[in-house]
Length: 389
Ligand SMILES: Cc1cc2nc3c(=O)[nH]c(=O)nc-3n(C[C@H](O)[C@H](O)[C@H](O)COP(=O)(O)OP(=O)(O)OC[C@H]3O[C@@H](n4cnc5c(N)ncnc54)[C@H](O)[C@@H]3O)c2cc1C
Image 1 (cartoon, rainbow, N blue to C red):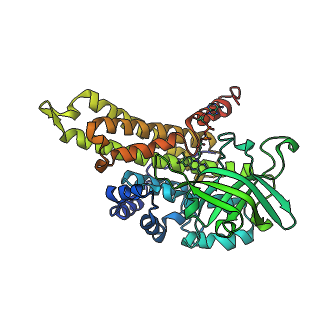
Image 2 (image 1 turned 60 degrees about the vertical axis):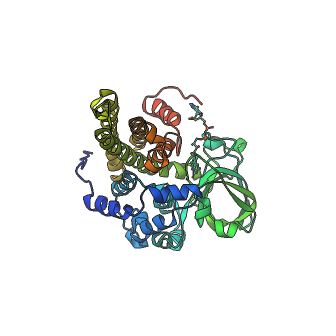
Image 3 (image 1 turned 90 degrees about the vertical axis):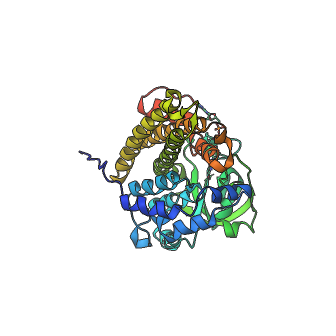
């Protein structure tokens, strides 16, 4: 099949509208939230009202049914504008698992309310404290008892759980020593957090380097109805993998936005700041790292576009989604470093916002998947080298 990539398909009208929406939410807004580890409710509500968080939901359920490429443009623009979509980006893509693998009744029950923002599905419980990147080794158990499952275990780094009505949970339903492959026997549940909170579920905020509203989630004999199971029991790992390509492409586009924010701030400042009688940007030691970051960002952008194009064409895009995430997170980190260095001591002053964005963009090299695990994927699945774990 011949694939024609529309590199020019850039959704300028979306870029313009999102940039306008972001305008009232400048640095001071984000700094104040950080002071109190608060949630950006006004920002999220503006994005919800404008329909951006429902971009990927089909029209029949009240969404905009836009291609993934349009969603990448939305997230890139938010980050390029100095804002952070981390508080709500998952509302865009977690529903993908429900959409692809949920029953007709589950979709009819939840998707219209997720599209309108009445229900927030933006908590994703995969990572656990004892097993980390070794996802198939996770220990949270869901045991079937009649018409319900009873859940015991613990998740960590679950972002936004305190600001979500529903959680997509990956739990083991068949003990690991009873399955042929470790990836079998895991199942996905749509847990109603509002209900579970009174039945043994506890959510504790986790203080972190960035204001990402991360939490620890404890399940102590939490009953969920059997109807909360998504798809077939035991197939959950496959369902989660299905959604990971979209997540990686979207996160890569946030990194691209950050990179562009840093490059533009650094280039501007380097022209204005005069030291030793000349603008610091005249020095190659300042100019070249910014130019290099620009080159890296443009290259990463091409990979993000390729990955989104394959995804939107319903073609396999695992290697491209992983490469996009790797290249864009590296580019944004290099751009952040160049920007912080260009600002000298002022880069450390909170009021300049460079240090905040620098901390925020560092996350992309660790979450939702760390750089090493992406390299391991490329080594094994693209280049056919031996598995390291
Ligand atoms: C702010 C924040 C928000 C997050 N939000 C969520 C969320 O909403 N939901 C969720 O489920 N998770 C979330 N995470 C978790 C995130 O996905 C994990 O932190 C990440 O996948 C790495 O897992 P880990 O922290 O357990 O590191 P570990 O698995 O302990 O790994 C530590 C280091 O060792 C490396 N490593 C491990 N094994 C190998 C190997 N075989 N080869 C080479 N290197 C290896 C890793 O790459 C990493 O650099 C979040 C994390 C953060 C920091």
